Length: 136
Image 1 (cartoon, one colour):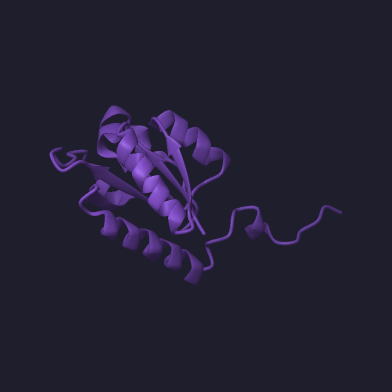
Image 2: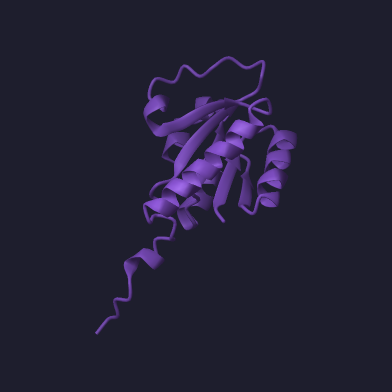
């Protein structure tokens, strides 16, 4: 299935999401902050990055976490947290969720992005998209 990066400071929430995503057949990678998420994603871009709004407020580079072509960035916040006021987030973000309340919506979005990537032929890793070219 797909690789998904989760970043934020709510370890209990992220661990629960990671276990649920793994049970659905995905590879979930937990990162503690935006720089770590960028490092991990630069080495192996995920299809989806799920980022806490608090992490975005702390480091606007969260919107530049690399994802595979056809992939997406999803923001989340807790039930008591105010919505983000970061002006540029709406162009880069597929959805903003309230977790854990919108957990089912999250799983539906993951499935939608994965299906969209499969239909458009973008589910392969960048190395596989290069074809069979051999130096010669």
